[in-house]
Length: 252
Image (cartoon, rainbow, N blue to C red; front, side, top):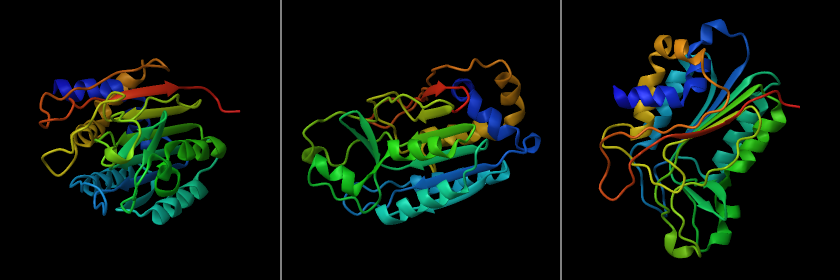
């Protein structure tokens, strides 16, 4: 319960907007992706399950969901395009990604299942820069953007990289955007021993209790950073946590 309580506190803005679906008339669109069946990297058992569970939760909360599991780079780009076309000014856009994610030179990249990286420079051709998604959300002029990344696992292509930075990089959130990470910058997240990843599992539990969380949301400050640390972890991995960066305000 302590774990879930800290997670609710960390993600107050997200739980507010998800939990008040019946009270909102704005358009809500979500892109939910879970990649685990990697061809050239370690497979992950939980991301597809995470995506299915999250998509179901968001649909119940009134989101129009673009859901994909085990995407190639082409199908991931197509999904992002479909998601972008549904966004409208003044609405809410949410992106959930579970799978391999790595950082290079301060940028974060999401890995499709067919990514083949012989060198760090291949990222621009084989992976998807998170900034591209943030730019699409910003261009759409949605009122609020939510990006959830359960993607801070170890870099499966470390030997091909000049740098060996672990986890994902902390990046500045554009105005009106919340970015949630499964663990602190530079740390690793566990895939989980059950059907869902550690972070996503706790997040789903917290989101299923909107009544208690929304009351706490009413007193939330517009900018906060917090962390969640479950007591169990996989051997060799960092203790899972959640870090968020929020920059609120009206878009131009």
